[in-house]
Image 1 (cartoon, helix red, strand yellow):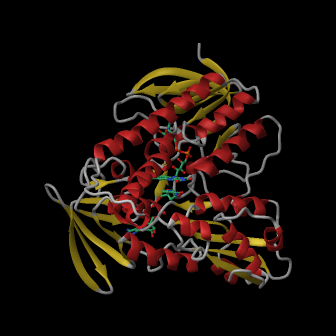
Image 2 (cartoon, rainbow, N blue to C red; image 1 turned 90 degrees about the horizontal axis):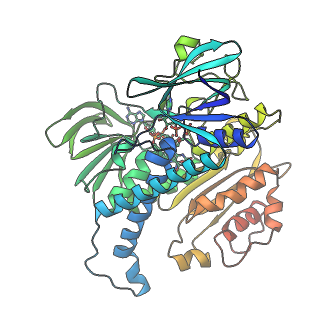
Length: 477
Ligand code: FAD
Ligand code: NAI
């Protein structure tokens, strides 16, 4: 007899585990099947985000920032530290400890909320009456069969590989390999100056690697507001020291015994560069391997994403899909919000995920964050807008932190003053962006932000100034 559930979630990343908890809270008998195994071969909930994505990358970013600060910033405070050393093994141990703590936390939440925690690969097998049949296998052997009224597919994404260049995570690394390098490589090559390339490049550069980033596009961070992107390019090349080459055409990549050679063309000139390690971070592809999509006729688009409507409904009755495996930004918070929305829809509620107010953050130093439209998008759409900018250079808190770099730019409708986009580069803008998200969600005007009291001295005063500047009444500009 198969185990019976109201809801079975396939995938235990930030989309799936959150959907499962919410469904259980709403009274559904819920199971979550997850296949992820950590390097020790043990189940580890949390998906890409927790195991080989958001959380470990931020742990390493912090460790490497601390190391950089000891070497370059402490002396300015009058603190002298000599002979600072980086113990990479210890840094990785700390990172792994954070993963284990959070993964255990999810397992605890499953217990607390009575979500059945099932380890293995879940495959849709077909219908049995009005139920879906899902088979669970582990290391190739079927270990369980479940039946569910509703299925939520949350199988995430995998790194895209360069054609003909499989990652071995020894010399050619994907995100998992880039987060687990046992030693600092002398010469690190990175293909793709996207979010992973810049974050991982920053980590290993700060720890001492020479980092070359090879990017196909002629424009840096094309999705970001270009004023911010230009500032980011300047600081990441000059201050962080990343050697970022734009408009590169990658040719042959050859792996040797302990190095990789990459041939590429730049401005019509052919070059070959030797690296000790190469990270390939050229985007991610939806993951439906082993899901049984074909067997049950689950519609995928030409790029392999599960096709869904605005409410994450697939073409099959009572089958839903969320997160990286469907359209939209590949972000953990987007996956989680879709998970909550689907669970609440099953319970008869009318939730809505507003794609227009999903924030983006890149955790370089300084950080980059934005929400809403860029200036380029507004121009292309013919929207009349006004803008206010303010820099961190004179902000007292930023100066105290020793991180008085960057700016906030606020874009508002020229007619109604409604905020249309906020773009930031600077210290802790990952946290500052939330004010802009709340403002946009509440359809605030730039005047609303300008009239709100911001604590002094705080970094958020720069957002306040940008809002004042949008009305040409900046006080410190
Ligand atoms: P995933 O997290 O990929 O989880 C899917 C899970 O399903 C996995 O555990 C997988 O093993 C499992 N699975 C797959 N198929 C099956 C099956 N058939 N049966 C059972 N289980 C299955 N996003 C941010 O918002 N902020 C960040 O700072 C950030 N940093 C990142 C850094 C890196 C290096 C990477 C690679 C990504 C980062 N992301 C970040 C993106 C973020 O990780 C993803 O958007 C997020 O994990 C997507 O969540 P998900 O639940 O859709 O899928
Ligand atoms: P990305 O889409 O951010 O960047 C990929 C880059 O590779 C692009 O600039 C692209 O032009 C370039 N590229 C593609 N093909 C190339 C080629 N053949 N040669 C040279 N360059 C090439 O993808 P990335 O960095 O792999 O990250 C995947 C996703 O993971 C991100 O889009 C994001 O959704 C998520 N992520 C989010 C983070 C965050 O929120 N802070 C951190 C890391 C990842």
